[in-house]
Length: 332
Image 1 (cartoon, rainbow, N blue to C red):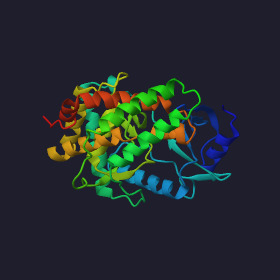
Image 2: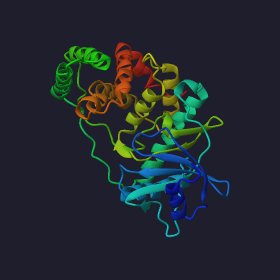
Image 3: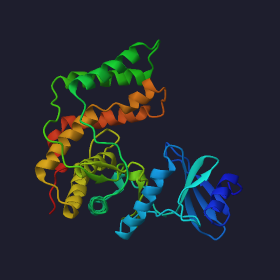
Image 4: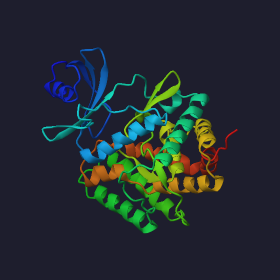
């Protein structure tokens, strides 16, 4: 609302005119976000930082300025009179960036040409990050889970479901999927061999972190998960997140267009990509994070995500050759 005293204080901290309108944004699981219009007719995005300390955030902001100099579409944070991009108010950090008009487009709304541009954008992001070598501390890469570790998690969740006095519909669906994974685990091969080369990546390149306007990506948002991993792994994850349908089916034609666009900007060896696809399948197969939230944290807000991931996993498992071919498509 226009009279929100918190947003008025944030605007004052950054030397902006008083807010005249504000809308709380529905997207964003960890932090509150607002769209704020100020008295001079401009609009800004205000973000509350409750899960990130100010120091690393300031380093991310410095990186964004450098990425903008490399023609990467980013929203560069507003700084106060002292050059600080994080305002501390009552022990909570806040940041402000200019509002970027556009849409978050699901993969189904991207034509082949837009898919090519999506891949090229990600390729340019990776190339710029490689050139800049960010001075930011990130978690070390981890090895893929072992068979024993995956089996242990499956049994852990099945036991948690069995211990419930009256399992509900979500419990029943989760148990059925877990039993399917347990049977498949006995015949699955864990990726082995040398770890793929690591590189700097955005870390969360999906539709809600991309703003489209007039057929182009005009902003890549939310760099909180910046990390080192094989860049091709982020390409694969971005494709899976963008192009998985309600029934779990992957849109292989669009995926291939994204991969071709990416490889036109940032070449990746065929064998490296094929190995990364195998590793991505194993990661998806041995990842149970929504169940961790439900059974270990008592948080049911991500229940729907497990079923959605499972539909994709089952379709992918049944069409492995076709998926690998799409995710290894060569530039034309």
